Amino acid sequence: MAVIASVKGALRLSALNQTARQAGLHKDQTLTDARAIVPKLDCHEADEAADAALLAAIADWCERYTPLLSIDTINGLPGLMLDITGCAHLFKGEDALRLDLISRLTAHGFVSNIAIAATPGAAWGIARYGDLDDSRIVATRAEREHVAPLPLEALRMAPKTVEELKQVGLKTIGCIVDLPRGPLSLRFGRPLLRRLDQALGREEETISPRMAVADLASERQFVDPISLQDDISRSILSLAGNLKPVLEKRALGARVLVLKLFRVDGERRMLSVVTANPEREPAHIEQLFQDRLASLHSPLDAGFGYDLIRLEIATSEPMLHQQADFVSKAPIADSYNALINRLGARLGTDRVQRFAMNDSHIPERSFGVLPSIRTSTAHSNASRTDMSQNMRTQAALSLADAEDVTELDTQLTRPILLLNRPEPVDVMAEIPEGLPQRFRWRKVLYEVAASEGPERIACEWWRDGRQALTRDYFKTEDRAGRRFWMFRLGLYDRESGRPHWYMHGLFP
Image (cartoon, one colour):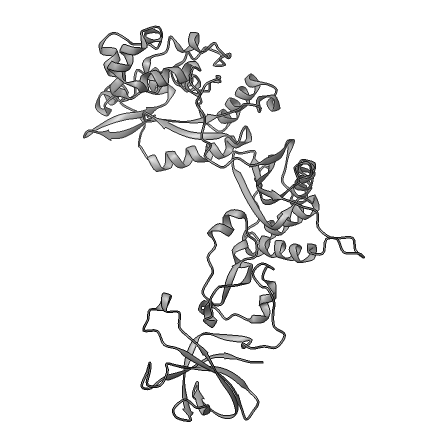
């Protein structure tokens, strides 16, 4: 079997299996020549998007070995780079880890070339160009003897540079290791020496992980895979219990927790929860994930079970001791925070919102909403939503943080309910700037029994321009006892010859 792709107008083999190689085919060979050798060659067109998606899925699955993992594609050769520093002992050594990875990939139908070395450059080159009979594990400071026999392509150099080196008779890495560095740099460029130093460990090279590395993590492997939700919940409780002493020692609490479930067949499922405040109680964390699991549109498909579960703390914040209630001995804010956490886990953190004051004297701009559950990143990126998008109530302002609200007046000076947007009203009033006598709103005529006003609110010319009009607000009560909040837009003779009236809110 072979994969074909169009290269400069000709169909060529871009990949082939071991059986095709044994039949005498090779990469970059034209399809015509390949079919002349193997008439029954099974060909498939290349699909780069599908290849990338498959490689990403394998990368997700390989997180069972280390979170420091990246996908690297150099010179058209895609692959995975894993930093297993400090992880090998969990699998009883580097060789056991490598054999476990190979056996699992083989069970899923993949052929893999895996090398372990102290430098990413050496591991990359040996995995792709090393001897298949070699153990593929290079001891520290032994990179030179393993890398020297490899072709120059193993240095991750540009194909043009490799061709130029071959033209002067330099075909392997060993040919350039001891050559004077000055002439090499002048003729072939500094990148050649940089790649050589990285492979030999003379220059430090780091791996940029494809996902942010968690602050703390705890995981558990199972000899017999688990699939029941009760078993998953007990595992979460145990893992959270492992993390609690570390969080207490560092005076931290978790704000964003991520649960990763690794299935036996290679699938990985990831769930995350965000807490309203720093949290480290195992029972609370377990309850949050129970609510998160309950909110899923479809239950988790455990397949043949999960053989590894990992709980990560993606974001943490300082957690100070709080004043406890004298009777219950529990922190006063626990019940409120627990409610916010459970609502966020079930409905989504973006749907649980709180009211906050804004620096504006225009009523619809004087406050907005923010997420009740905010991490430091979410808080910096949050923007206040204009009040005109939804109906807001002043009573709900009590949910705002203390730094947002200084004091709430017990006597309402603003209506409880503000409309989505001010609605036009036909008003009969004393001329030129008198109180309204009667008005028609939504095709209903109201007789005014009492009025109070006006309360004048000037425009924000720095936002709306100097042509914006002034508002005169009136509190009115009709003969049935209904109370309204309306305003006249524009001042007689100074701003408008015929000001218009609008209904803006209703009092209880």
